[in-house]
Length: 219
Image (cartoon, rainbow, N blue to C red; front, side, top):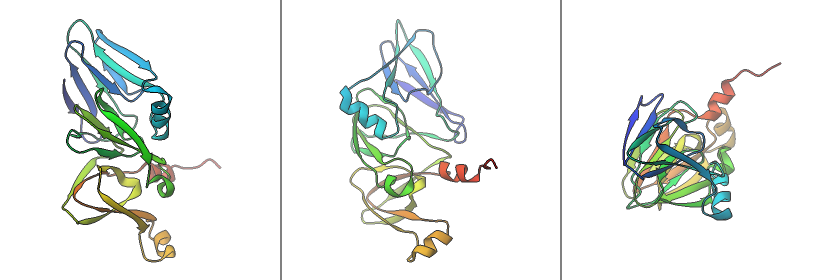
Protein backbone atom coordinates (compact mmCIF):
# COMPACT_ATOMS: atom_id res chain seq x y z
CA UNK A 1 0.00 0.00 0.00
CA UNK A 2 1.41 3.36 -1.05
CA UNK A 3 0.09 6.84 -0.32
CA UNK A 4 0.75 10.51 -0.92
CA UNK A 5 -0.61 13.62 0.76
CA UNK A 6 -1.59 16.39 -1.63
CA UNK A 7 -2.29 20.13 -1.13
CA UNK A 8 -0.64 20.40 2.31
CA UNK A 9 -1.15 21.99 4.75
CA UNK A 10 -4.31 24.05 4.24
CA UNK A 11 -6.44 21.72 2.10
CA UNK A 12 -4.72 18.34 2.39
CA UNK A 13 -6.17 15.16 0.91
CA UNK A 14 -4.74 11.64 1.06
CA UNK A 15 -4.34 9.55 -2.10
CA UNK A 16 -4.16 5.85 -1.18
CA UNK A 17 -2.82 3.48 -3.85
CA UNK A 18 -4.08 -0.03 -3.17
CA UNK A 19 -2.70 -3.23 -4.62
CA UNK A 20 -5.18 -5.95 -5.61
CA UNK A 21 -7.15 -7.13 -2.53
CA UNK A 22 -5.61 -4.50 -0.23
CA UNK A 23 -7.97 -2.72 2.18
CA UNK A 24 -7.85 0.61 4.00
CA UNK A 25 -10.20 1.71 6.78
CA UNK A 26 -11.34 5.36 6.74
CA UNK A 27 -13.58 7.66 8.70
CA UNK A 28 -17.15 7.59 7.41
CA UNK A 29 -17.89 10.26 4.80
CA UNK A 30 -14.22 10.99 3.99
CA UNK A 31 -14.16 9.51 0.45
CA UNK A 32 -13.65 12.20 -2.21
CA UNK A 33 -13.15 9.89 -5.20
CA UNK A 34 -11.98 6.38 -6.06
CA UNK A 35 -11.25 3.98 -8.88
CA UNK A 36 -14.21 2.11 -10.32
CA UNK A 37 -12.81 -1.23 -9.16
CA UNK A 38 -12.52 -0.18 -5.50
CA UNK A 39 -15.26 -1.70 -3.36
CA UNK A 40 -16.65 0.40 -0.50
CA UNK A 41 -18.15 -1.40 2.48
CA UNK A 42 -19.70 0.21 5.57
CA UNK A 43 -20.57 -1.98 8.51
CA UNK A 44 -20.37 -2.35 12.27
CA UNK A 45 -17.09 -4.12 13.03
CA UNK A 46 -15.67 -5.48 16.26
CA UNK A 47 -18.96 -5.89 18.13
CA UNK A 48 -21.02 -3.44 20.14
CA UNK A 49 -18.14 -2.60 22.49
CA UNK A 50 -15.94 -1.37 19.63
CA UNK A 51 -18.89 0.46 18.06
CA UNK A 52 -19.66 2.41 21.24
CA UNK A 53 -15.95 3.11 21.65
CA UNK A 54 -15.85 4.71 18.20
CA UNK A 55 -18.90 6.82 19.01
CA UNK A 56 -17.31 8.05 22.24
CA UNK A 57 -14.17 9.15 20.42
CA UNK A 58 -16.10 11.17 17.85
CA UNK A 59 -15.96 8.61 15.03
CA UNK A 60 -18.84 7.07 13.15
CA UNK A 61 -20.49 3.93 14.54
CA UNK A 62 -19.79 2.28 11.19
CA UNK A 63 -16.39 1.40 9.80
CA UNK A 64 -15.90 2.26 6.14
CA UNK A 65 -13.40 0.12 4.24
CA UNK A 66 -12.10 0.39 0.69
CA UNK A 67 -10.79 -2.73 -1.09
CA UNK A 68 -9.19 -2.91 -4.54
CA UNK A 69 -10.73 -5.74 -6.58
CA UNK A 70 -9.43 -7.34 -9.78
CA UNK A 71 -6.25 -5.27 -9.78
CA UNK A 72 -4.83 -2.13 -8.19
CA UNK A 73 -6.90 0.98 -7.49
CA UNK A 74 -6.89 4.25 -5.61
CA UNK A 75 -9.07 6.15 -3.19
CA UNK A 76 -8.73 9.84 -2.30
CA UNK A 77 -9.78 10.81 1.22
CA UNK A 78 -10.65 14.34 2.34
CA UNK A 79 -11.20 15.45 5.96
CA UNK A 80 -14.34 17.35 6.82
CA UNK A 81 -12.46 20.57 7.66
CA UNK A 82 -9.65 22.42 5.87
CA UNK A 83 -6.31 21.48 7.32
CA UNK A 84 -3.42 19.06 7.37
CA UNK A 85 -2.87 15.30 7.16
CA UNK A 86 0.14 13.44 8.59
CA UNK A 87 1.31 9.84 8.65
CA UNK A 88 2.28 8.47 12.07
CA UNK A 89 4.18 5.24 12.76
CA UNK A 90 2.60 3.36 15.69
CA UNK A 91 4.33 0.01 15.11
CA UNK A 92 6.77 0.46 18.01
CA UNK A 93 4.87 2.84 20.30
CA UNK A 94 1.10 3.42 20.55
CA UNK A 95 -0.37 6.85 19.97
CA UNK A 96 -3.12 8.58 21.93
CA UNK A 97 -5.41 10.31 19.40
CA UNK A 98 -7.95 12.95 20.39
CA UNK A 99 -11.55 13.05 19.24
CA UNK A 100 -12.03 13.56 15.49
CA UNK A 101 -8.34 13.35 14.53
CA UNK A 102 -8.45 9.86 12.97
CA UNK A 103 -8.75 9.90 9.16
CA UNK A 104 -7.65 6.47 7.93
CA UNK A 105 -5.68 3.43 8.95
CA UNK A 106 -4.58 -0.08 8.09
CA UNK A 107 -7.17 -2.70 9.05
CA UNK A 108 -4.49 -4.43 11.18
CA UNK A 109 -4.30 -1.50 13.62
CA UNK A 110 -5.74 -1.94 17.10
CA UNK A 111 -8.02 0.75 18.60
CA UNK A 112 -8.70 1.11 22.33
CA UNK A 113 -10.94 3.76 23.92
CA UNK A 114 -9.94 5.71 27.00
CA UNK A 115 -11.12 8.78 28.90
CA UNK A 116 -9.92 12.12 27.54
CA UNK A 117 -8.05 14.70 29.58
CA UNK A 118 -9.26 17.29 27.04
CA UNK A 119 -12.90 16.50 27.23
CA UNK A 120 -13.60 17.45 30.80
CA UNK A 121 -12.12 20.91 30.30
CA UNK A 122 -11.75 21.64 26.60
CA UNK A 123 -15.24 20.79 25.40
CA UNK A 124 -13.88 18.81 22.43
CA UNK A 125 -14.83 15.22 23.16
CA UNK A 126 -14.57 13.24 26.39
CA UNK A 127 -12.75 10.20 25.03
CA UNK A 128 -9.60 9.43 23.06
CA UNK A 129 -8.30 6.42 21.11
CA UNK A 130 -5.07 4.54 21.74
CA UNK A 131 -3.93 3.23 18.36
CA UNK A 132 -1.16 0.68 17.86
CA UNK A 133 0.06 -1.95 15.43
CA UNK A 134 1.60 -2.26 11.98
CA UNK A 135 0.54 -0.38 8.89
CA UNK A 136 -0.51 3.05 7.75
CA UNK A 137 -2.14 5.55 10.13
CA UNK A 138 -3.26 8.99 8.92
CA UNK A 139 -4.37 11.82 11.20
CA UNK A 140 -6.10 15.03 10.14
CA UNK A 141 -6.49 18.40 11.81
CA UNK A 142 -8.09 21.81 11.50
CA UNK A 143 -5.11 23.89 10.40
CA UNK A 144 -1.56 22.62 9.97
CA UNK A 145 -0.11 19.88 12.18
CA UNK A 146 3.05 20.72 14.11
CA UNK A 147 4.91 17.82 15.83
CA UNK A 148 6.97 18.62 18.91
CA UNK A 149 9.68 16.19 20.05
CA UNK A 150 10.29 16.12 23.80
CA UNK A 151 13.30 14.64 25.55
CA UNK A 152 12.97 12.53 28.68
CA UNK A 153 11.65 14.65 31.54
CA UNK A 154 11.20 17.74 29.34
CA UNK A 155 7.94 19.60 30.10
CA UNK A 156 5.94 21.49 27.49
CA UNK A 157 2.64 23.38 27.69
CA UNK A 158 -0.12 22.87 25.09
CA UNK A 159 -3.56 24.46 24.98
CA UNK A 160 -5.99 21.54 25.13
CA UNK A 161 -7.88 22.80 22.07
CA UNK A 162 -4.72 22.53 19.95
CA UNK A 163 -3.82 18.98 21.03
CA UNK A 164 -4.17 16.37 18.25
CA UNK A 165 -2.23 13.35 19.52
CA UNK A 166 0.73 12.29 21.67
CA UNK A 167 2.89 9.25 22.32
CA UNK A 168 1.41 6.75 24.75
CA UNK A 169 3.10 6.70 28.13
CA UNK A 170 3.91 10.42 28.21
CA UNK A 171 3.22 12.21 31.46
CA UNK A 172 0.66 14.98 31.47
CA UNK A 173 -0.95 17.30 33.98
CA UNK A 174 -3.92 19.60 33.53
CA UNK A 175 -3.69 23.04 35.10
CA UNK A 176 -4.81 26.64 34.68
CA UNK A 177 -2.87 28.71 32.15
CA UNK A 178 -2.08 31.30 34.84
CA UNK A 179 -1.83 31.09 38.59
CA UNK A 180 -5.19 32.76 39.15
CA UNK A 181 -8.56 31.79 37.71
CA UNK A 182 -9.30 35.43 36.77
CA UNK A 183 -5.95 35.63 34.97
CA UNK A 184 -6.73 32.47 33.00
CA UNK A 185 -10.10 33.87 31.92
CA UNK A 186 -8.86 37.35 30.98
CA UNK A 187 -5.87 35.96 29.08
CA UNK A 188 -8.16 33.91 26.85
CA UNK A 189 -6.36 30.73 27.92
CA UNK A 190 -8.25 28.39 30.24
CA UNK A 191 -6.97 24.89 30.97
CA UNK A 192 -3.68 23.76 29.46
CA UNK A 193 -1.93 20.40 29.36
CA UNK A 194 1.61 20.15 30.68
CA UNK A 195 3.12 17.30 28.68
CA UNK A 196 6.29 15.54 29.84
CA UNK A 197 8.64 13.63 27.52
CA UNK A 198 10.00 11.50 26.14
CA UNK A 199 7.67 11.39 23.17
CA UNK A 200 6.05 13.38 20.40
CA UNK A 201 3.16 15.82 20.80
CA UNK A 202 1.13 16.63 17.67
CA UNK A 203 -0.56 20.04 17.73
CA UNK A 204 -2.88 21.83 15.31
CA UNK A 205 -2.50 25.50 14.42
CA UNK A 206 -6.22 26.32 14.60
CA UNK A 207 -9.17 25.27 16.77
CA UNK A 208 -12.81 24.78 15.87
CA UNK A 209 -13.92 26.42 19.11
CA UNK A 210 -12.16 29.65 18.08
CA UNK A 211 -13.81 29.47 14.63
CA UNK A 212 -17.25 29.01 16.17
CA UNK A 213 -16.65 31.91 18.56
CA UNK A 214 -15.90 34.19 15.59
CA UNK A 215 -19.10 33.34 13.73
CA UNK A 216 -21.85 35.95 13.93
CA UNK A 217 -24.99 34.98 15.78
CA UNK A 218 -28.45 35.71 14.51
CA UNK A 219 -30.22 38.48 16.34
